[in-house]
Image 1 (cartoon, rainbow, N blue to C red):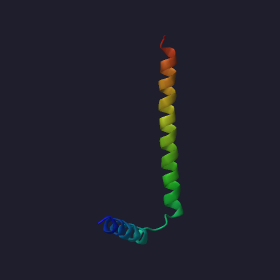
Image 2 (image 1 turned 60 degrees about the vertical axis):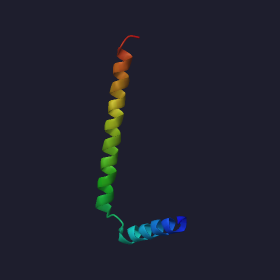
Image 3 (image 1 turned 120 degrees about the horizontal axis):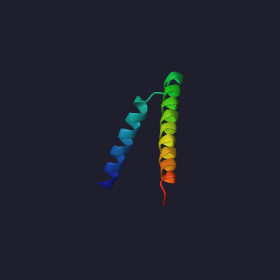
Length: 58
């Protein structure tokens, strides 16, 4: 029973890897830009929260 489940998972993984393709340089660059912009936005929000928290008297 457990062997058939594992076999089915490997079959699905093999099928997925056969269909996957390497991204082009343009797709890679777009993905990198989106990730960096997202990290920058999260950092700015965290900075603003810390700034507001420091301004509130304890």
